[in-house]
Length: 68
Image (tube, rainbow, N blue to C red; front, top):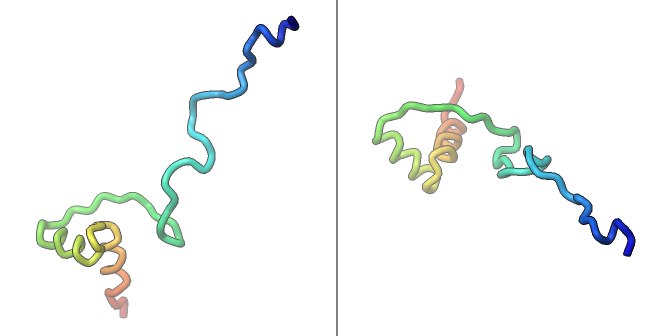
């Protein structure tokens, strides 16, 4: 029996993050994690606007707000 048959060769490595791992971004321009402090009423309203997703509610409200 050849030596290579008796010894299992390591074919995979472990440790560290792989490329392409994790949840994909939902916004076309990418997103950035930030902390926001809001009152309970605003939180509930933004959850309704975003269909239960607070971040989506914030994005929708921001898009609806006129800059000029």
